[in-house]
Image (tube, rainbow, N blue to C red; front, side, top):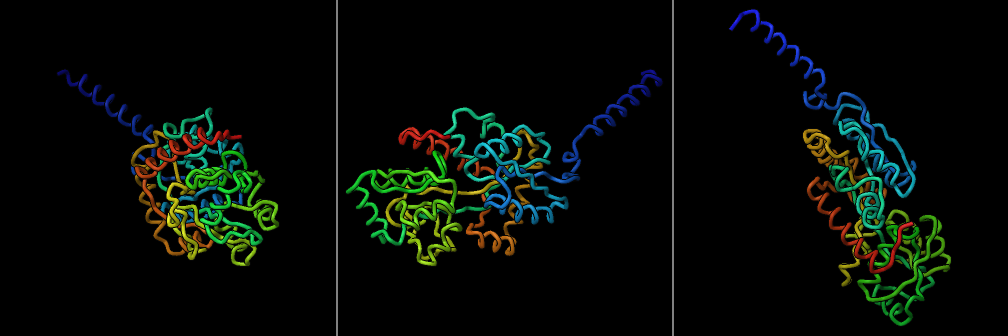
Amino acid sequence: MNLAISRRRFGLLLYASAALAAQTPAFAQGAWPDRPIRLVVPFPPGGGTDLVARAMGQTLSEHLGQPIVIDNKPGASTIIGTDAVAKAAPDGYTLLLSGSTSFSVNPALRAKLPYDMLRDLAPIAIVARTPLVLVVGKGTPWHSVPELVAAAKARPKSIRYATFGAGSAPHLAGELFALAAGVQLQDIPYKGSSQSSMAVIGGEIEVGIDTVASVAPHVRSGKLRALGIVGLTRSGMLPEVRTLAEQGLPDATFDGWYGFAAPARTPAPVIDKLARTVVVAMGNPALQAQLRAQGMEPVAIGAAAFRTQMEGEISRYRALAHRAGIVAE
């Protein structure tokens, strides 16, 4: 081979290699992350999801060595913020932290979303559960789930329960309870926890289904009576209250939770590093105590189980919506 040609080819190879290295993302060189990470929260500041994001963001920042910047993007039942992440560059610098409303309820109840939750986002980990609790006003005669069920069977559609609108977590939980118990209840929409709790306390309606963190103070003060935890396990805030499953209604379980996700096609090494970091972070006793103080149960559920849970809940809630005639607003 001509020596001049050989040198020329070698030079071209070096040039191409340098150009390729310049275009290679930082994560491929083992340097991810090398700048701040944006964590999108599709809720306003101050709510449960925002509290989880800020608690987790601080701990993850310490482990990853980069700031975690919380970006609150509320609106359209979490669709605006979720869509922003689904359409973001899959480079590991834009993440989503949201609840099961985004991951399973919206895909089940809304026929037209600007993204496909299972196709356009990559699950990373579920980090906390937020159990709901079924409560009644102190002026009602019911002190147990069987008593409430008996009354509902005797007077179909006469017992009213609070929701946050069609397709909200309390609405789905109420319909699951009614279906499992073989009763008919009347859902009444309210604007949020404060309004619905006051309605049950004041006797405007009979039943409430809300997060443990929202109603536990009213239960402790005697203004509300807790009949059953709607989630998978008992709550540390109300440890004496049995789950509905423990009371013979396993099909009434509604699992509220918070999880991390990234845009689909985010490189596997980034997803793996994030997942490992989340597991380590969730072992922090201070973080666990912070979440429990807000009525949440810390967990560390990996990407594969996360996706399986999403798929199962989407199927379950879609069937429930069809049977109960639920149309998300």
